[in-house]
Every structure is written in C-alpha cells, then in structure tokens.
Image (cartoon, rainbow, N blue to C red; front, side):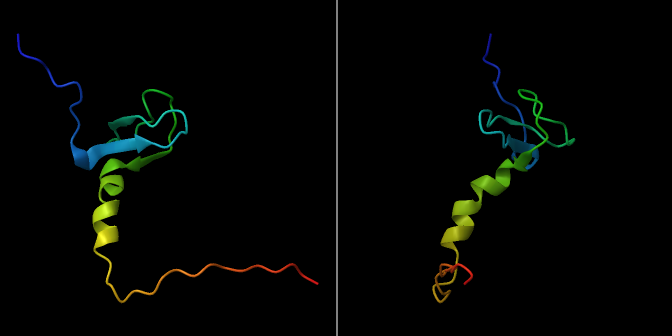
Length: 74
C-alpha cells in the first residue's frame, strides 16, 4: 500500500496559528479556529512564506528606517 500524504492543504488556504505554544499549520479556508488549541488568531501561511521574496525586492534607493527617540517630559 502506498503512503498517504500527512498534510493535504492548498497553500492558498493554509493558516499558521499565532498562539505562542502552538504554531500549527491548518486549513484556514473556512475561518475555523485552530484544531489543536482552539485559537482564532491565525495568519495566512502564504504571507509568511512570501516575506523574504518581498523583502529582497525592495528598491535600493529606499532609505533605511530611523529609530524614534523619546525624551521624558520636563
């Protein structure tokens, strides 16, 4: 008998649970909560995987981010 894939979810509907101790990838196409912990906090997995591609595609002329300096009120 052939092996069945352990995970069968399309990338476009895969969601990553954002709970700190969970981080489960599940089918989020229907807006269902995480099947492992029940959390409703999730993010599309495709967006996480695409972050490196978009980050490297930035224009070279883009200025670097500057830090915000906060002084106490006198």
